[in-house]
Length: 153
Image 1: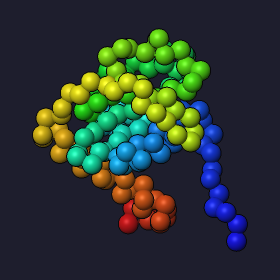
Image 2: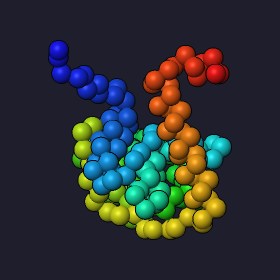
Image 3: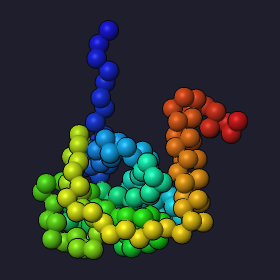
């Protein structure tokens, strides 16, 4: 028997997300990728912490990727903290100072600057934790039984 295969995501943003998710797991956070907190929004990574805190992490692979992002401020209403995740080559002076900063690659990440905490209202937190749980459960079900989701069972 060989070693388990460690597939490296193809897209640069997905590689950053993988490193972020690995690093956050080491901090006792669980994560989901490409979650929709509200219609018209899709965050790259949402993290749920051990005390119920919710973080949004947007992964940017370069200057053009950041410049094209016009929705990031809309994510602030759906999390307790917001972060950018970038690689070592990214010009970090482009990023707003009032946001968190994570340096990442496909294998790990490091929080360089914590985003300011803006606690969610309890009702919104409840909704977001439920969305997080459903998103995670649907992803797991798709891995375990992909035909069931297609058939709508």
